[in-house]
Length: 199
Image 1 (tube, rainbow, N blue to C red):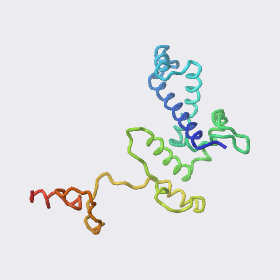
Image 2: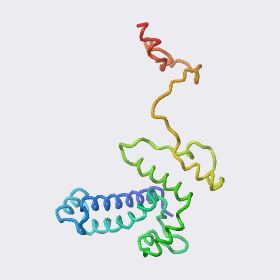
Image 3: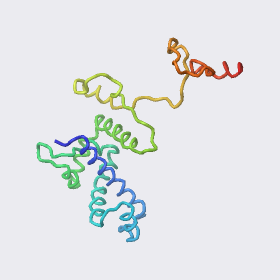
Image 4: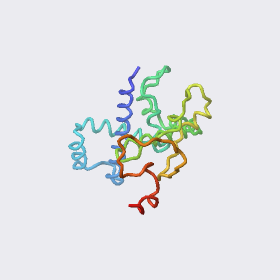
């Protein structure tokens, strides 16, 4: 069984492969082959050999097909060989008929909910992105003991507000911290109009 660290590394590798394929597709501008200078620049920036580049590019192009149909699904495609002998690389070797069949079986509410969560998670890996919280993180329930419908609802993003709404009655009895500066009002969120005028 894979450790979480290894599985996460495998997920990041898949994500890198897709982003590499996206980048190559974008800079190729419809040409069938990338220019050698472009490839050389990618190799220099990533430290990959030409063989590694071709491997990751080809796998990324295949994972990209999944992402086009089901954005966010990368983390939910198994990373290890399944009991029925289907390995993680088997997903990349489906012929067109098999892929079409798989796609028709995955067009449902459950997969859509997984993909929304997966897409949000992928986005959260960007260092400039806001943190992402899912509903299930704020519940004290065992996910394996709830129905599929309830599970789908827990995969939603936890609603967050973009601005702070001051409610002085929410915690009226919070004590003033011992080290709180004497010249600063308490509670700290008293609207400015109440204390600026008194200075």
